[in-house]
Length: 281
Image 1 (spheres, helix red, strand yellow):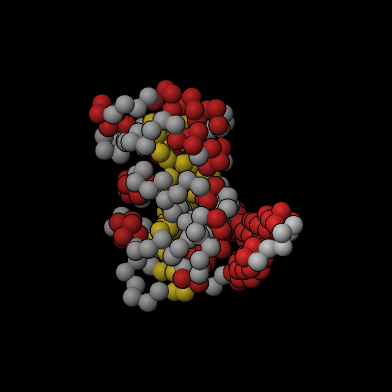
Image 2 (cartoon, rainbow, N blue to C red; image 1 turned 60 degrees about the vertical axis):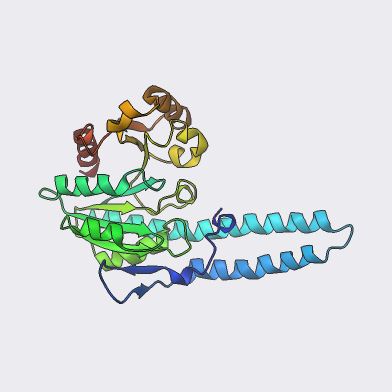
């Protein structure tokens, strides 16, 4: 999981703040930070064992290391899931419809979100949690739509987790009967593991990425209720087989709904807005 992808750095570097603020609000990790701190000691012990192995102890040490890694992974996800349930309870109590938007970088999440907020802004109260490793560039774009937004910079982290969302929610303080969009860090791997307490997970991939994306990253597609094939206005210029892409999605996630969409020419936008409104009631 994240400890193998470089995400296990100093997570105290995570910042949660409103775009344009000069002073960042430091993020306190409590439970999850404690588990990560314990993991550094555990990994160090096993690294030392590998540096000076007994001739007959190599396999034994490796087995302990693998077992320790699995145990750590379970601890982190268990702590995350507890906080996700707290978020879910908060959403239910306030009748907030929360959407977790996931994709690889450049698939068009922010552009779609900007357009969506302008479409819904007059009739629905909306809020955004914006996830990026660094900068508040996307949050500033969202702010231009008039919607209240909180930026989460994850530092070395490659995903949002339930604790980050929990802290951001308390800064946003979203109203009852509202829509909350959580734009995750651009990544199709680790976000699949972390429940944020959302009602629905929506995965977006664009026609510039290749139709086999669902086969390469099955976990994120399997765990999503809606799949958006984005930037279809570019189809005349690319060798992208839409029907093949749909077949791959259905192979991984038969229950998922699929939308073909383009923000540029508005194709499929009405279907997306109607899907949101129908499920947000």
